[in-house]
Image (cartoon, rainbow, N blue to C red; front, side, top):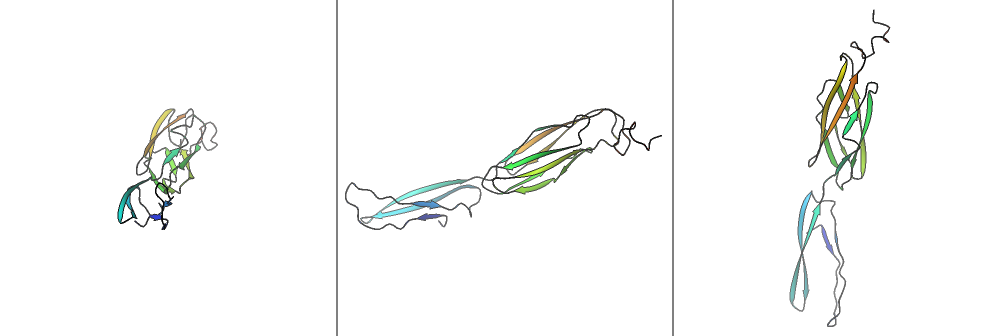
Length: 170
């Protein structure tokens, strides 16, 4: 296998002695999953075969929160997505609530790196009350559901500014 490298070792061993042989693996070209390879050692005309098995992980997503509460005043909150794996991680979101926006909605994160998502609540045109929604962040192997709460405590017109503050209202 091209991902297995065995030191070239030659020579004679006295009975009862041993020799260290270094075996290294290169994961960089391997896809996610389990990989198996064979290493043969020859001595005195006999071959001893050893099987090597290596599991390559994908990206491992962790997120800074699974619950967001905008209350009645906040309109923008950031989340941090972290890739704790050893492969680049692609993710997507499924946000579909009219008053909730994510930027970006998808992306990729290098190993041991992070990305910021801006989550924005738009109260424009919403009546008084509490609003709840959720969105999912999905990778090849993981899904995180994020719960979102928001409230509107003053009537707003289509510009999202409370009516009693909006100078354009009559």
